Image (cartoon, rainbow, N blue to C red; front, side):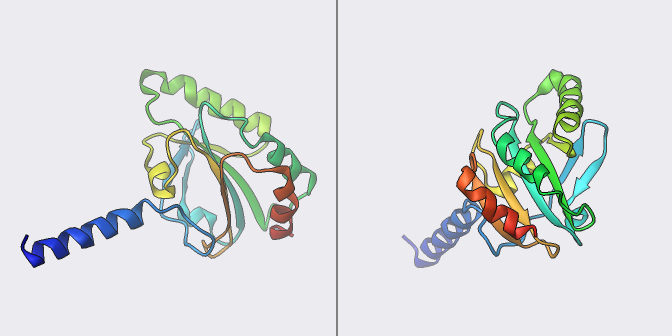
Length: 166
């Protein structure tokens, strides 16, 4: 094989591998745009100036980190400094979009936090979450990830997350 072609393939594979790597503490949150059931848009820049606890959930697992959300409510967080947001993977809802818009509104009412839909799955790809996986990110006011966990967060982690928000 031509050495230049081989080198090109190695570079392409390396870039592809990097893009599949999960986000880690110290990484900057990638750009995104999601929309709530009421049409409110949330973009990366909306997370600046406050620490953000961002839950990303698959629509089949809306209660994945319900205990952590309840724990955060008990902390009486300063809303001027800290915000909590849920984004639900709503890609592939097809003709059920109106129903899912209503579910997002209802979920927002029940949890007491804004809930947005990742309608095209782009945020899931940028966060490098696998199908039906969800997670939590704590993002500081500069857009840097200070905590990340995929799947359900163990109750032993709650106080650690709480200390990041104090």
